Amino acid sequence: MSRHKTTPDADVVMATMRVIERLGPSRLTLAKVAREAGLAPATLLQRFGSKRGLLLAVAEQGAGAAPACFARLRAAHKSPLAALFAALEEMACLCESPEALANNLAFLEIDLTDPDFHRLALKNSRQTLAGYRALLKDAIARGEIVKCNTLRMARALSAMAGGSLLSWAILREGTVTRWLRADIETLLAPLMRKKAGRGIMSGGAKR
Image (cartoon, rainbow, N blue to C red):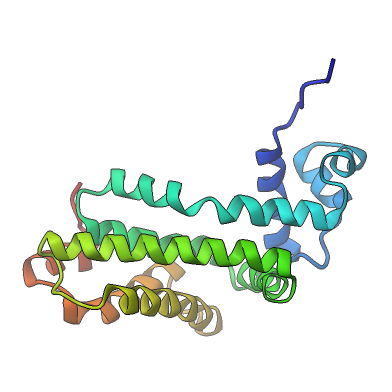
């Protein structure tokens, strides 16, 4: 009879993500993750096979997370536009500090150079763009924004959000969330209906 896992793989992945934010993937070791997760290094080796296997598990969890994230935000916000702002602001979790962003970007380097990681990053990117586009379509239908090319706007929002985080990490003025929100508002302001824009841009969207 197999033994039950005392620590679920999902918890190990979360522990790995915390270590990545502090140290980056290059300085990450199974021993450091094991210490963070409260497990023996041999246990991680048995479950994931190697450091690369563990990092792939992190990428796999991220690749499937977008639909659930958008569903959660849709449930939390009556306004599609408010949900869109919230979805974009989720990216701020990558940037709790400039150092954390640098370490997360080091993982992106793996995504861009390793085919197995790129496949997962591509899946996540496509799902994220689809989520943005669906919220834009809903916002148009609700009369919150004017008609636009939702595919191009979704791509523009995604690109802007990533660049906004980098800009904040260099300039370091105010909080990253406020910085990101200001850039989102600048991009979306020309599309917003006046009534919808007042509530969303003031941060006062109602459920």
